[in-house]
Length: 112
Image (cartoon, rainbow, N blue to C red; front, side, top):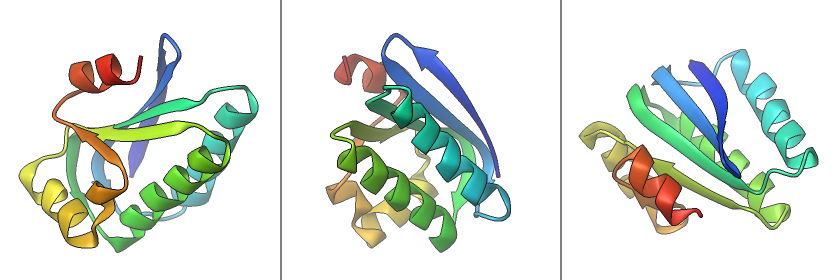
């Protein structure tokens, strides 16, 4: 699992690439999200446009991020899911809890 944080105005963009399947970086990622929250970030957009697949552990990472952001009274959304990933979010019902946008541009505009 590879990921990169960038800032677009007041939105923290977390762009994933490859497969989101957890692993040793999962704890590090969660700590980095907490660090951004401690620094005052309240809007997060998870970009899956360069992601091929997500498994149940990856879903757990997204759910944990969502819970942490909500606990800090923030907002988290996802964008750029391919058909396979969108299907996983649909089956897990996370798409009913987390806002989903077609692409980064639309997601950023919605989070303003």
